[in-house]
Image (cartoon, rainbow, N blue to C red):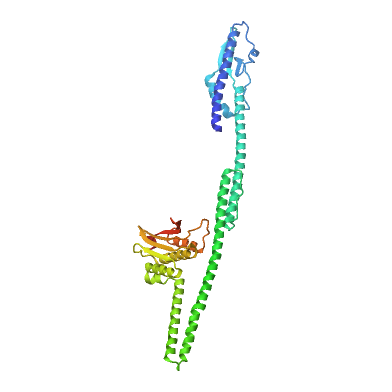
Length: 405
């Protein structure tokens, strides 16, 4: 911009210089025309009031006049226009004297140079103000950047309670709001993870306690009874056949109870039936046993043959259905449950619907719900929950079975 304005200024200065020289020479010619009628020779002091011209007698030497304050580049820029348009003139009077008229633009060049200096000064001041404004703005931006960087370091260190302070700039306020929302979400997620970890440890301890009770109170009692009955058989040589038959029946009943308890314990620990009977039979057996155990009508509907899934996918799907049924038994207060499995395109759709009380708004998920969501994620699906038309809850997910196979 400075160069553009400088070029415009020099171009206009050239026009003004030519105009001033033209006016001065026209005035000098009129003055010489009036003096030519006088019988006396003109006095050189009569021309002292003329600017931008040098008038002298022919043969009379005058000191050279130069604009010492004007730089050479400005003189070199404007001098060609002066030399081209105003060549020196020689005029003769009646008395035979001759006078030279030559242009002398040093005054005008000085004024032009003052204008150029003023322009440079204005731009220098504008540049200084601009640099100060940029420095101030960058300083504010740097402070905001340092604050954000410090906040990110705190987040990387696990200090999710970090918050950015509000500022007077809307952009920085938006950035601070987004950052604070992010750290708030991370803090809530960390709190949920801590709660889940505590509950997982509690559930793990409960399972170990339950397993210990099952081994001690159930299986241990059966083993103690079998041991006692076996000891009685060893010392029953004089017993009647009826007594021996009774002891044998008690021993068989104890062995049968031990076997049933052992099977139930193994079934709770790992669904072995998946490997032996397949997913359809395993789900059918699960729903039948759950219906008998809880007294709730449970219907399993298989529209088509289920696709062949990988062992991990079968285990995740089986555990998901199992956990859903357990949630119904604990919280739903339902009288009927319907489980539907079928293929829709390349998706294996699973829908579990009950007629219970449904999911209360704002309720906090427990371990079971979190485990179902994680198992759905492992199956490449998203667990969806919605209310049924009448009452109850519908749990649904679509599994890309070609991917899970």
